[in-house]
Length: 290
Image 1 (cartoon, helix red, strand yellow):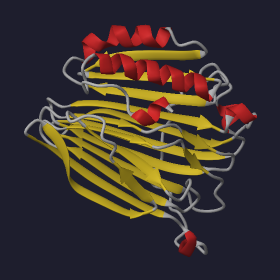
Image 2 (cartoon, rainbow, N blue to C red; image 1 turned 135 degrees about the horizontal axis):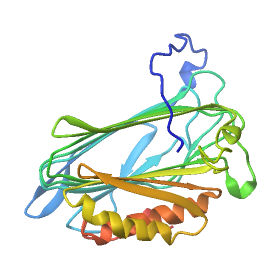
Image 3 (spheres, helix red, strand yellow; image 1 turned 180 degrees about the vertical axis):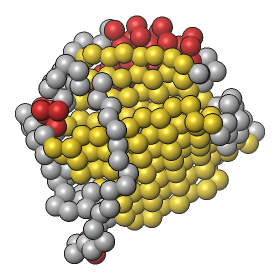
């Protein structure tokens, strides 16, 4: 669909005249289980990123990411790491959509590392990322799972604010994803859009004019059993084109839409179906209902 080769050897200029005003954000969270209750045992916050912990369930720990900088700009660097130790149930979401603004020089960089131990349940469900015209984003996901762990990951990118009729004509967006189970690489993905994003996604072979792109991952021993219900949920989502496949204990679903709210509704349907399979034993995070 919209995947393409991603080059990681491009050298950015060392000198940044605006380095003193760049935003930095660091989050690190480790959760473990004791007496049937998942608790946080390590929390690190630095720079523009914060975490809040609403009390929703004793069976799982909910963490909500807050970016107090109000968005990301060129030269900003964000680094997040979330770990669910053996038996822990951890759900990470965000308080609002993340916005990546126009960059004049260096790109915005975002690294996310996810780790789930033996029989752990980990869900990473940030709300949508909005890329404005002129944005430059380099992002990386590194995921390491135990063979018995369960993971749900939903990622949605919207090019411009569709409700305001915005069109993204200048963009540099590079994504790299790696998922390992038991130390072995089982899935990798790369996306690159450079230049006129609207033109790049106009072809039926790339996006059919879509401006909202979403990926849903489900990694678990019962992945093959969850494929049919997930496909039914996606088929019932109007205004979207979607497909899902299962292999090696992993489901990969892709969603494209011409409107951001259509893609979001499809992602919610997909996640609700996966949650009904018992992944976290509860509803979606509260932030997804607002």
